[in-house]
Structures are given as structure tokens and as C-alpha cells.
Length: 133
Length: 88
Image 1 (tube, each protein chain N blue to C red):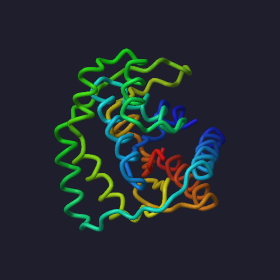
Image 2 (image 1 turned 90 degrees about the vertical axis):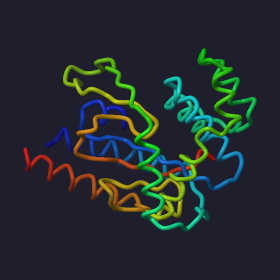
Image 3 (image 1 turned 120 degrees about the vertical axis):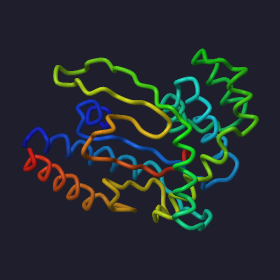
Image 4 (image 1 turned 60 degrees about the vertical axis):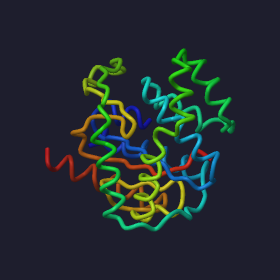
């Protein structure tokens, strides 16, 4: 559904890491960023949204299942190449008021959106966009 | 307008599902926003985007999709959906 909105140019979807659960959270974030080095960021994102293996071995096995270069991936993961990036996104999220996960903002507004407010906000935005042509 | 309303409604349903499937509390650092923003901007400046042409799912789906570590979609999209989340 989001993909359709993205493909039709209505919306852009952005993701920022929040690290709420220590090492497992960090490993998932780092593995996703390392996957991104080989064009598999969104594959890792979808993978971690649907399963609970946040081990180093599990990440490497998933990289292998995607036919990524596992040596490069492992080096990236073990060296914590993207530690500063992930920590920076976490700090920014906290600064933006994202104190619960997932927090969704639309055009920079609405941290900790609740469903009714979200619906109203999306409809309002859509109407404004239509009026603008 | 109807099409936009349908898309908007679909989006809302998707996020309701997200809210129901994941919850937690952030207890991270409280560094200043300016420091964090600077760090992120510096990181993003070092990360080239990979540009791909996605499959044409619908006749009107002609928007070039840019995939990188931070976002999915056109950089010119009028609506930006920002999700802050933890995989756990």
C-alpha cells in the first residue's frame, strides 16, 4: 500500500532507526545498513520486520540467502561501520519527540500520531495537494 | 479526488497496522537537536543514492524511485512519511 503511494509519486517514505532494546536492536540496524551497501537495505528492513532472529549469524545467513558478498557484509557488520549513522538517527529521533515506536510523522508534523489524527492529517494534505493542482 | 481519498485511506490503514504490530518506549540519549542533525547530515552527504527504475505496476506509475538507506520514493514527492522505529 505504501509502495503504491511511493510509486505514484504521492509520497516518499523515510525510515530512521531507534535503538530501544540494546544490542539486538543495534545489530538489526547495523545489518540493515550493511545490506544497503549491496543494494539490500529494504530486503533487510522487511526481513527484520517479520522475524525475531537478531543474531550475527542470522544476519550473515540472510545476507547469504540474498546472494550478497558475505565476506564484505561480515566485515561491515563486525567493524560496526554504520554505528555513528545509527546512533545519530536515534539521537535525532529522540530530539524529534519520537518517544514511542513506531512513530510516524507526515511532512515533519505529528510525532506519536494516533490513528484518527493520522487519517485526518492525510485527508487534509491530500485535499490541499489537489487544490494546488 | 476520490482516487486521492482512496490512497489516503489506504495509507492510514497501513499505519494503523504498524502501530498495532510494534510498540515500545524510547529511552535514548537527549543530545541537542542541532548536534544530532549535523551528524546525520554529515553521514547522509557521504552516502550516494542508488537510482533504479521500478517495474511499472500501473500505467500511471512512471515515477522514478530512488532507493538508499534513508528513503524510498521520489525526492520531489509532496508528502513525506517519516517512520522512526526499532525492528524489535
